[in-house]
Length: 323
Ligand code: ACO
Image (cartoon, rainbow, N blue to C red; front, top):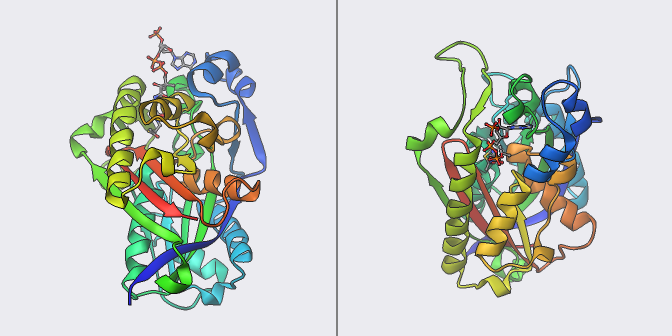
């Protein structure tokens, strides 16, 4: 009896405070024009003082549970993809589990920076289809604003805070009726650490550190590697670009997204893009964009959706699912 991991609900949360490009231009030598033209970003959300990654994750999870029609006690696996945990330990997933009042199952974090949600989706799919767990909360949540160097115009204009969550269930194939995760593909190349990293850590500086990036090199790597991951996952699933209904990319830069769309011969109207109003929310960006597509009626049950991401490590990957 084979099982499928089906997405039954999604939810999002964005902090109330909005930081516009014009606001940033008052702090560093930049402009709304430069940021919009180079990245597609207009504004981003910033978590309030005392508002933690777990708070964002819990708010997104409640919305996802509501859409799925489940209560927290139905969940037996909580996985949080994050690079900005509340604490060095325990895992933010354990804090989320407690805040939601979940008493069953397991909880852990996954750290693959901006690729975290793809890594977590691939992991959760295996936990569910093996029969080890029945229902999972899969969350991407970040307070990236806390690790930005607000004096560095090359990075501080790019990122924002937010969270997105999926409720996923293990279903027998007959019940799933073709829905669920079809294939995923994960990669990393640690030799490229210097392209994008944080200059601090528990074991080195005993601080959280700040984001450092060689933006133009990351940009060049991104289009090539993301396209290759998407082609691989499509090949594994036996589908062509024509079969894909929606493309939900990690929202790093509108130009990277357009580059991938062009390379793979996708149509611009297949892309779900939230970058203008959110910036790069790292591991949260894919569920934030996916849920935007579900909520406005573009992504419908049965649609074929391609997800992809690339982030620090470098890590990258893609996943194909039927909504
Ligand atoms: N405002 C104004 N000027 C700026 C700013 C800014 N915010 N940031 C950099 N510049 C300047 C640079 O100093 C440089 O000036 P110079 O020519 O006098 O030296 C000039 O703009 C060009 O800099 P580049 O870095 O070459 O600009 P580029 O066109 O590559 O755009 C950007 C920079 C937007 C960071 C781009 O490289 C990018 O998006 N890279 C991808 C990185 C990314 O998205 N990382 C997120 C995590 S990884 C991921 O999610 C894929």
